Amino acid sequence: MSLRILATGGTFDKRYDPVTGKLGFGESHLPSIVERARLGSEVRVQIVMLIDSLEMLDEHRRRVLDACRAAPEKSIVVVHGTDTMVETAAVLAGAALDKTIVLTGAMVPFSVGDSDASFNLGAAVAFARALPSGVWVAMNGLARPWSDVRKNRVAGVFESLG
View 1 (cartoon, one colour):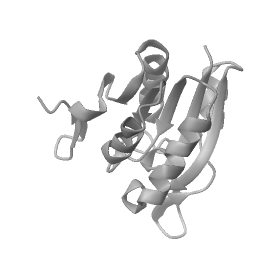
View 2 (cartoon, rainbow, N blue to C red):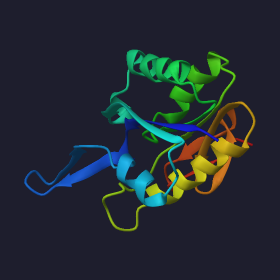
View 3 (cartoon, rainbow, N blue to C red):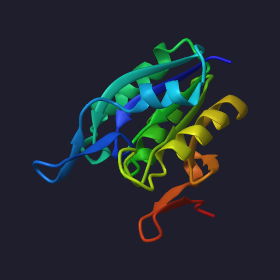
């Protein structure tokens, strides 16, 4: 089953800069992760942008939506920053595309030890291939409808609203 992975940035793709002592963006880690995971030629990685989700504006969310619309694949994973993932999911859901779109991210950058990035990406790929059409958030090994999830900043996990 063909799948598209869209990179938007977020903690997932941040790197530590030893000169400034800050986290920032270089190239996305996604192409090398996908290659190492042996996901096959039916997976396409597309870099939409590399920004912190706290800097995302409506125009950025429209770019993500446009990329989802233009993708020929019916299964899409959007790697996104966790702080505003639900806001972008709402925009995607409002378009009512006949696709399975799964948003995921990381609490700890891929480039840092003990990162949850690879696990979350792998789970999101599986969910995107198995779940019905709609917009989902997949974090911490669970996938929930976008409208039934929130980031628990104290616990550092995503949880159901219910």
